[in-house]
Amino acid sequence: MIGLNITGHQVEKLEDPFGLLSGERYEFFLELEVDEDDELYSEKGVGLKCIFVRNESEDKITSYHFFERGTEKVLDFELEEDEEELVLAYCQKFAKEVEE
Image (cartoon, rainbow, N blue to C red; front, top):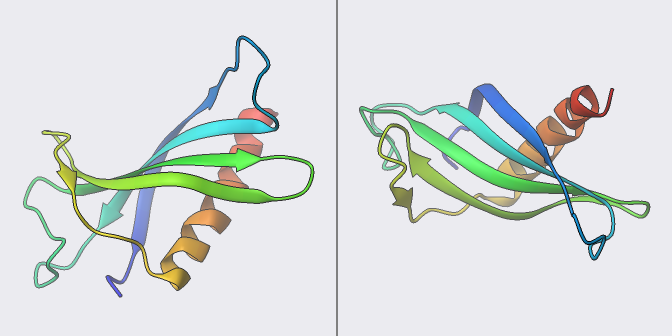
């Protein structure tokens, strides 16, 4: 576990101009705080980009990747199950702000 600590975010509601996809989609860029001794640590900072989908039956994270802030270099790491639950809860909370 990387001890995920979300310190901020940017979110944008994604539009489906052709109406092909069900539900609402949001692109989140999460700012993370990572300990220096963690293998995910970068001096430039680390972020997590994820696509959050909200539809009638469920909310879910459909894709994500870690990136180095400033360079946008993709980092090859995966979320653990409890971390994914934390990210999902965070996205559920803040997607409501965009909807209002």
